[in-house]
Image (tube, rainbow, N blue to C red):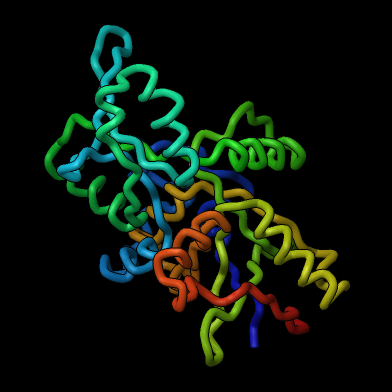
Amino acid sequence: MKSFIRLGATLGIAGSVFLTGLSGIGNIPGMGNLEAIALPQDQVVKKLQEVPVFTLTNPKGEFVVLSRNNASKPISQVGFFISKQDAQKFLDNRLKKENPQLAGTLQVRPLSLADYYKIVQESKKKSDSVIYTLVPTQQQVASATSMLNQNGKKVEQFNGIPLFVPKFKKDNSYLTIPLAKGNERYIPFFFEKEQAVALLEEFKKAVPKEGANTEIQVVDLYGVMEALNSSSDPSINKIVLYPSRESINFIRSLAPNQSPGAKPAAAPAPKK
């Protein structure tokens, strides 16, 4: 049973990292003109459905649109936060100071990454002037930037939503985990560096020889989402987005008897 899958070429991360923003989501380095046999939209949505995001709404459930001037051109944005705590801090530390009357009517509302994805897709169809921004956790941005610089890539700041993926160094294959009963194994993409480190440490203890050939790769969520939409690699279906520990605790608080996913457990890679 394989505990690794080769996917580097598909995601374009064999020797690079995605630093694209939402405006550049249409083009992925290394994809070329591959025939699109990507996941059906319902499967893409299903993968994104497991990850919560958080935004601010008024009592009617309407998004809070923030406007600012950029080179004399007004820009309207709606923020979606990876962290619920970050969304709450934005409400408490900024909006309540700037407009306490308005802020007093607002609340942090949970949605899913799938909801965000669908909102962006609809916005592109309608040529909506509002920018729907996904806000990363700054601690994880700092971790991603530090890791890239340690690996010889000159990066001042990671401009995206970092994901951390345990992988093997030599052949760009990825560590896999079981998420359900049966023989199926999946590639975990973590929103927290600490989660990826914990999985890799567990694997190194179980299989020291194989573990010496491992590392953590940093990729961008936008690139992964686009790959789900357009990749011709069947292994793309093995990707699982693993929410942060904060988000897992939030999910459990909504459904105490329902676990968001099995605890990651890596198996040793077989001899080639």
